[in-house]
Image 1: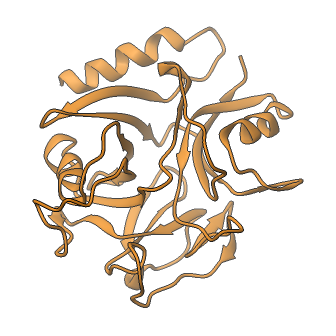
Image 2: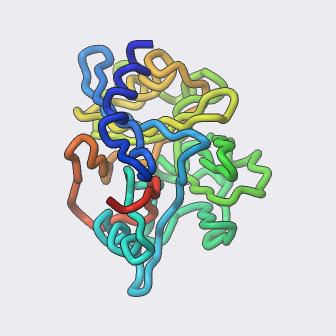
Image 3: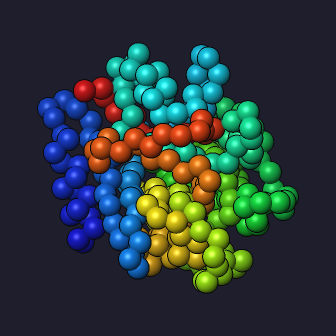
Length: 243
């Protein structure tokens, strides 16, 4: 309840007559580690962004500028999955019903290949995270990454509580009903075990997917945050009416 009230308190000041609500974002703490979360529901216009008229967007500002031509803007955004040097997706990528890169189900090197990895997908407000090997298709938007953080409320079996492999990490979790998705980024370096438990024990979610740990970025104007750095591949974000 306290977390919900905090989210509402952050969201309500941004509600103006005739303007869509900005995504509810908040700063939270778990076991002494600061996190930032942004929560999305079926009422939000959540999209994936990869390529514009001049190649891949690469950053939040480029997406925002493209939306401005439509009288829209980003409500929040973050990087949304692993990508190659040319910023093309490593795994499945579906944008507005168009599959731009196929799914990868084989084990492989690095975090992406640490099975089970997963697919975050949604259509009309129905958010799901699938084990990539069980992905049924049919999503309007989908992005593949790995490893999965939570599978039915259980941590990925390869995670070690005392692992010294720590990074600023980001990812997404969904509730059991598929009615809301919570995006999170750690504001200090954490290992996989703690990051997964944040989704399960603090946010109360059953399924969660890791996005990245080398390039983890957040755009949350309600919090005055606009992370910069190297160009990114897939970006996920909400779209709202322009101020």
